[in-house]
Length: 294
Image (spheres, rainbow, N blue to C red):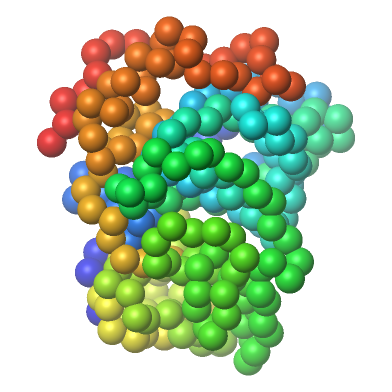
């Protein structure tokens, strides 16, 4: 039932802001269309936190970013003109398509301190939609169906599962949900897709008679399965249909190596528009040559 266990690797995004990088790894590039998965925090931020922890304006192509917080607040600004605070149990869904730039700033933390905890995932776009027009939406309330049953409080973030459908516009079949599980509660992991996974954000769970703790992603076989919470636990379940091989360079995702090179060239040459409300600085293209793709 469990095909692989992936352990998060700690990565410093700058200024001491660490995340747990889960996807991709060399042996598992994607789960369905999910090509990237970062666990942010938990991190306590004191008032006046340094601006070096902000994520300055940077570009994306060929994907949708999906930001979901358990706690805290992050301010999003993008090149389409959107300015939106990301808050707990809401979803910021940004489709980069042919190109978008955005920043993520810790403005509330600077004013009053904060406790930041959440997940950012990237969903690769199908080949026919990789160059779609960029877009941004914030979803909350009834856009994200919730349920409460037998010790499990669930929220559907995207796609269809548990007999429900979330409002976010997706470009390929997928599901993505957050389950808050009381100790002793069990939950179904949705089936019906070729690739599925479960990520433990907090607590501890049992699957196939084994105990698993935070920071682990369990990549599952396609048959139905259930997970048992051994203590109060917060888990993410996700999966979907594969969209084909994808290459990643920095913040760019594409089925084409040449398209990645073009995006890198465009960013280096200043041909990608910065957010109007945040255009005084940006993250430069990494130094060195483009990586060799497999």
